[in-house]
Image 1: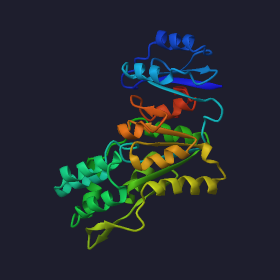
Image 2 (image 1 turned 90 degrees about the vertical axis):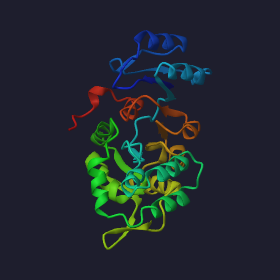
Image 3 (image 1 turned 120 degrees about the vertical axis):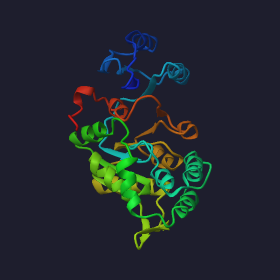
Image 4 (image 1 turned 30 degrees about the vertical axis):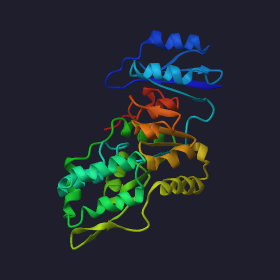
Length: 293
């Protein structure tokens, strides 16, 4: 048995009940369950429909996300999340680069690396090199003034942890940022690269080994083994090319507002919903979300 989930942006919920009912009838689905009024609904289907991606494309033009996945085991025991442009709305290195006066140059490299056009490690080394001499105190300034959380993140982490799940933040970015973001959102652990500092200034380098695409797969393997879980027990979320490894290995891999070349390689794509979409995909309703500050 499979489950079809339809959802829209929480800021502009426009999921038409007649649309959901029409699709349910066309696919011979079961009873419709509304997970959030006007925002998210689901129904069971006996198999993956042959015209899934044609329907998906039609719904995208209506600002509706559609996911069809196996019903069994969809509620996961672990969240593995990217940070930049996933749990937060920015790319930390781009924000640091703005402060260093090399913003445009770094942003171009970041965009190409996240789209899979450049080697991640080489692109990271080049960008960090452009930050050489930047005052370490700028990190705190960027955290306080430039970094904003992705909508739905607090609800996602809080709901999964309240239901016994483990939450890990894994980033190709920097520990100076993941430590703070993980604390604010309630993650159990975080992994990232460490910016090297001497005499209060960035040296223009990071601690080796560099954590890139493979490091996220390693985190998936190591944490599940430590917790006695299988990779099927994991829901992973990311947006860039360096996330593809963990997205393909996790039981549920979600491309969230992802780069086109990344989304094209993922079966679960969320382009309009926020991070609460990961809860709806697991069958949680909005009433299940614990109160968050």
